[in-house]
Length: 275
Image (tube, rainbow, N blue to C red; front, side, top):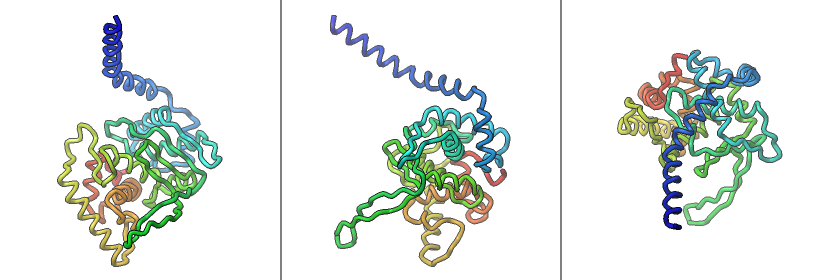
């Protein structure tokens, strides 16, 4: 009898796992079908000018993504911050720009978004050339963790939304890291969305590393170009930095490096130079 009960429980578990994707898709479709709140629309008009540069079809798509994103992600205030509707909407709008025109699991690895009032301090331990470990404090505007959290400074997230054409956007930066982390550690080689037939991993690697080497050369020569020198740290940071510029300074990026722009366009499946 105990064996029969065990078998039934196993079958129920297997059936539940098999049906879960359908249930998730059904739940998300119901959320996206709801009317977009008027209060959210007003927040976007006041705080996120990038949204109004999008073609109408992409605006509608973005709003549906936002509804699912806000329903599924836990926003947690840190250092005494009380998370408001405005914070959720402003952050979600910027994050969901990365999901446009792509089959998505809504940053499936992200469970929580930790929001600080401003820059937050982290403690780092580094090892110098002699093997001595050094501890230091660093103030950050954002951080992407592989354990399911994205950490953001609300002050910087708000400033990044307000200036939609300066190539600096901490929300886009940190959620680009999350895309990069979907197949393991962030290495500047994010997996393409399912069904993306124009993306070539080999071509991406060639173009990406040539552009990364160019930025490193600019840093060594002291050239202040289009791309933030922060991106020269490693390939993961380079991908996050060029993602910021791709969405906010698309025409400048296309002029700076047409091949890099084309790779980002094929990966993200949007063409912001035409917005």
